[in-house]
Image (cartoon, rainbow, N blue to C red; front, side, top):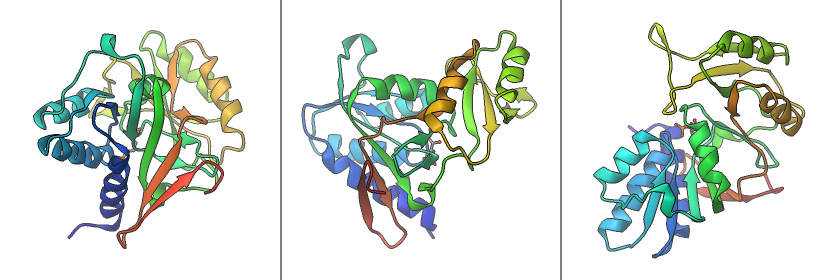
Length: 230
Ligand code: 5RP
């Protein structure tokens, strides 16, 4: 049987794709929630909807191609009309922690050129304060030990993400450090300090980027949350 989180994700995705209209250029997110949105868009394309898309990971691009969603090169993208993506945590200001699935850099590049950025989550992702979920930070492999030390000096415990006995590699061939800060009082300030470290490619803070968050519940309901209304 489908568990509560999976149902919440599926319901949120189903609500979010209602914002899509023919002729739009879309950004496709990454992860187990974005999966449902891509499936839904695939179904809409099968039923005659005409859209184009770019993806935030090789995995999502492969899924989109399987579903015959037309993928265009980034050279053809000016602005994206809508991007639908998941998140690991969402606070009351609709600030996010993302990157649990390792695609944070591409996700942020895509989010930055998106007119209407929709985040889809099951309700367990809505939090009072960010930080229970360790902040993913994408780091260039060169001299990673120095970068790790600088991250630790900000007051966290950085853990290199592993794939078996080797460092996990992002689609951009970088490493990820999952940084446990505990409760984060000032996400924007911490984002600036993490970003200032040379060797950091990007962090998982998405501050003030989400336009709406759609949260799905196990009882089949979907809540659309606008900034300041969580
Ligand atoms: C990938 C992400 C995902 O959106 C985030 O980790 C949420 O994943 P899921 O929908 O599987 O819970 O940021 O980099």
